[in-house]
Length: 256
Image 1: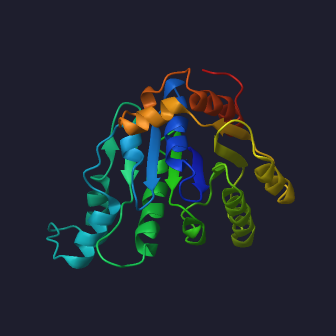
Image 2: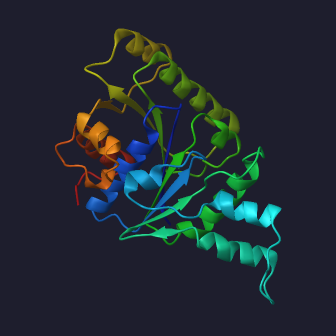
């Protein structure tokens, strides 16, 4: 049984970088194999990991829905779809990546998310850890893409709006009765210390940050230069914050 970690929050809060640094920690500490899941239609987890994505679940589904597919003799459409979906897996040393991407045209993302969820369930037992970078907002929750997870990181940037988004996500989790074993509050991109207005909003919502991640010039530079975040140095403030948080997430106190 794999240990599942999901990352959620409003747009621009740094979810993808946090997911990449979680994967960095797991790989560095021998917690492999890891399945990285980019469930955001605006996919960029692969870039953060230094992995090139040539096919996504969205493009495969498009080909099945809008084109005439030549299915090999003796195979059902469902079996052939599963075969084609497996071609979307990007393999690397200790880390495999699947990417939802987006389909062509204005169609709803409900069906791709349903397929993604089923696909992840089928793959999960082959991995020690699954790390999912979700789309911005709460749609993935209402579609139940994010359920049955061991740890959900609720990420806010250094803003009152971001903290309120966390509050709404928590309300929706309760409403939908999703199976989330552990919820952790992450305040990201903090310039110096928490602004009193952000602290006040946390207090109003009865939220206590499990970790505060500072603004990190090294992380910004890696993103700007499109370097894999897996190569971030231990001196990085963001890396140190994630390293401090991870034992709370996976329930271990060692660093092995």
